[in-house]
Image (tube, rainbow, N blue to C red; front, side, top):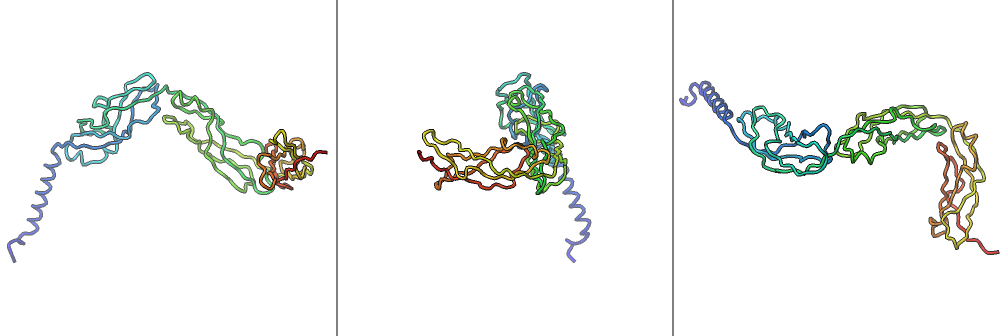
Length: 307
């Protein structure tokens, strides 16, 4: 057997030990590396908030031993940018080693800021404002049922923290939109509050309880509801045919019994008249009443003839 293969395991062990020693020596050397890191933290006065986002990332040069640089947790931590400002407004600030640090330093030195080296800052006073919540939960009851009254929202208001100038334009917040079909019983659901989409804002309570009351409905026939023509030219008098329509309306039993026909409005819009002289009928009902049957969804507009 060739001498090359004599004491093979001893030779392999010596080779492995030599490689490990080389790696140990190599990774203990100090190196410089240029990296692009995300800006994950911005330190600013507790009385202020940014109204525009900071730079997404900054390219820097770092110095550390090979072992430290090979680890990735310090990269995931990103960079902390410190802003020395106590009043709202806009300014152009330099990005330097004086106001930029690694979030997880771990014996890694920040040597140089490569780019960008400045940042247009916009900040405003931080305020807290209570805003009412509007529900966008759409409940479609099953046949023979109706929604009773307004949705109950708990809590009815939530606190929003954000830049003063931007929050001034907000008068309410909404829940996310959600549709429920075929509901027969009262229900309460947890609905997330929709973010206003303003940079720097946060909502202290991110969801509310929406309670919807469902009741069986009763129907009632209204046989002679007059259709009124609107938006006709002043020099063009016309009638509609048929002049009256029949409606079957559903609603809560006690409410439907007291509904007056005077509160039911049916109109045909002259400006929506088609080529065949027909215009759609639009019926307006008081809240929480429903059209179950409509005898005509359009009427013909007929010019009046002189006597």
